[in-house]
Image 1 (cartoon, rainbow, N blue to C red):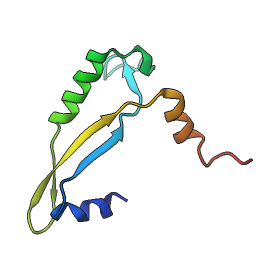
Image 2: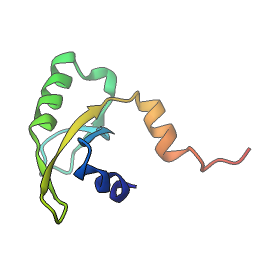
Image 3: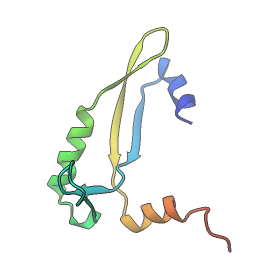
Image 4: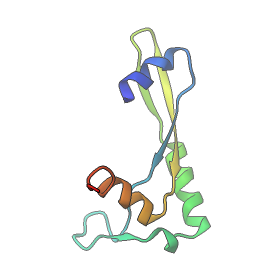
Length: 93
């Protein structure tokens, strides 16, 4: 899917809206990392993460020139996010 979307970047601005994934607590090099429930993140935490992701820049080489990609985090309720990724289309009823 991303290849098809990227092919439009020559003529269209690209903004990727995506779920952040689990936000983990603990040190990056620690084996004691645990997901933090979304409800424990403050508005300041979310704004800080949005700013960090907004500062991330990736460049796509289109062969005819390079284009920057913009990223915007989407904060999903834990139950909804995990129900989609771990359960959606994996249940039979």
